[in-house]
Length: 101
Image (cartoon, rainbow, N blue to C red; front, side, top):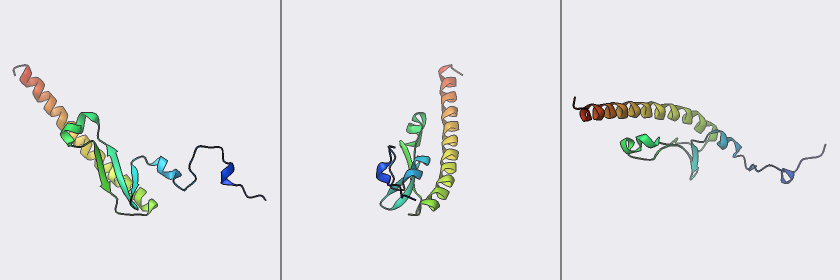
C-alpha cells in the first residue's frame, strides 16, 4: 500500500498537530504553557477592568490543558454572569435616579 504524502494535501489546514486547537478557541500556548484566554463582553469591559480574561492552566500537556480549560471556562462564565447581574443592577439604579424616584 502506498504511503500518502502530506505535501499532496489540498486543504489549507496546518498538519503540525495543532488541528485540535481550532476546536478550543479559548486555548492559547505561550512559552510551552497552555493558557485560558477569553474576551470580556464589550458591555462588561469597564466594570471588569480588562478586555480579556487570561489565566495560566499551569501545564504544557495539551490533553491536561483541555481538561483544565473546561473548568476555567465554567469559572469565567460564572464570574461574567455575576458581573452582568451587577451591571444590570447599576443600570436599573441609574434609571430610577434619573426618573426621580
